[in-house]
Image (cartoon, rainbow, N blue to C red; front, side, top):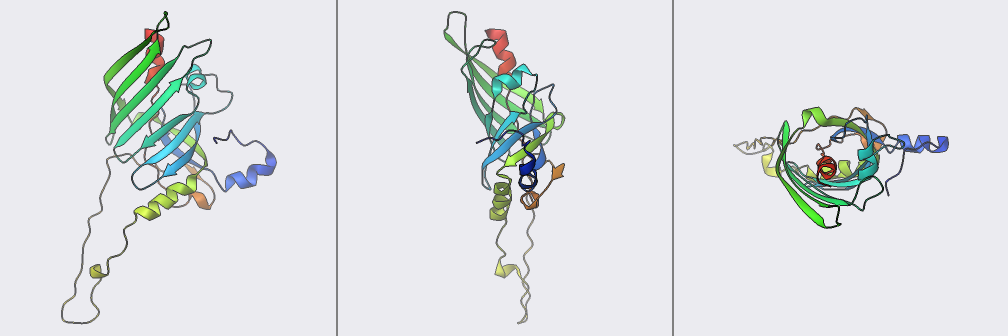
Length: 218
């Protein structure tokens, strides 16, 4: 479902019409960009699948693979599990965050296996993250049109009562105050094709704190 970087020349034209580059929150050090898709989008929440690029020499990228991230205007949840390999043993992660303008406050539950193979659960009651310093370009290779559709669905339908009356002795006018979200709204850094037009993206955080903690408690 998650395509790798498109390298075949014959597909370049098609890819340019379907991809866009957006800034997302992805707290993995040592990499310059990530790839992903929009799995589903609605006015309430958006589901992303994000992963590192190919041939990235980063142990965290090798471990996490693709993460499914569900984000709303002020909340974030991530559920992830890793079966283990020769470098790192099994662990799972359940992360929930409350997102403000410049920071995210998260609660993380991590489960690992100790040397005896017994699962051990660790809870981090409060993990603070600076959202402004963790932005990273993410190349959305599939599903970008779902963001645009969600925006259209969220646009309020004009109220006939809000229009000034063309006849009669009284003119009625309704003033609406635009609501603002505390979630950071990154601006697309590169966008190509019709699918990229008119879209905005709520900041997304990928919870990788489990990786470092897993090394500590294994």
